[in-house]
Length: 232
Image (cartoon, rainbow, N blue to C red; front, side):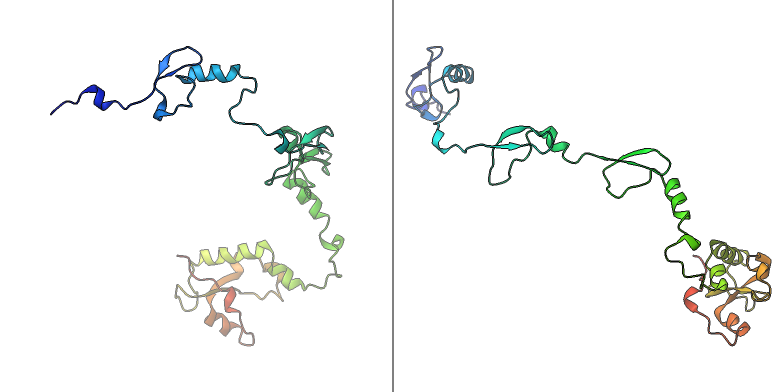
């Protein structure tokens, strides 16, 4: 492979003299406006200039800073507004503390610091203790006890627990037709209207499918939505 002469490979560039170290150098990309040979000399040259910044300055185009009062620390400062935002706080610390936490007292006497405006209790125990005072006759929705006792007894947690215990004991199988995988109801052997004390007794309940349970109560129309299917 033929080797070219060094004078042919080099571009015809002009040598310049550095303003700091007086060293001859070739400017980058042939620019004749370069004044220094390296970054180090360029930093020394710019720091020695009176304005210490590159480019031209136009003081008449600078925005006038308005004097405002910081809403956090109540100090006056000169704000600088732009198109993107309007300066309201004097520093970042004041901006962070623009919404301080509120201090409230719980019913137990403990002081609470919170950012939630509606928080009144320090724990769930204090909240439940206060809510218990609003049940029964002390509730603002109390209407004189018009709810039937039968509905109250069947909506308690003890009734739902008794119901599931009967299904698990019978292995989710109807006691009359002995079929599994069908919709089930919990049936009281002794009726609740005559024996209300046996409503939560597991020995007083059996599992029946909807059809077999309907035969026990022919005058009633049972609700199939509340029936339970065998667990997978």
